[in-house]
Length: 143
Image: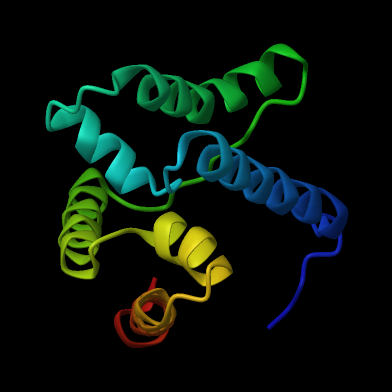
């Protein structure tokens, strides 16, 4: 494995992780809610009554890269997949979040920080499947 030192940003990555952790801590401390994106979006689509904070949280997720672009630091996304590949991947992730009763943000960020064994198992499975998917895609199928 090679690390592209021109694009290696440990400081920015650490700062981003700290902001994510801070946002998750603020949400749980002041609202008693877990910052799991699938649960936030699912509650919004499922007719939850507490719409305000859910919309604000999701607008923040979408608004951050828009704000970065406005400030002169646009986020460049390079997706090397077809639309059909993206749709299948999204569908499989959706199935996984239903079976795991949460997503990587809910289990991996919030659950692990609370010491949840269920979140530890879910995150280990998420990561193992991700590693296997990348291996198969790059070394078996080729791409």
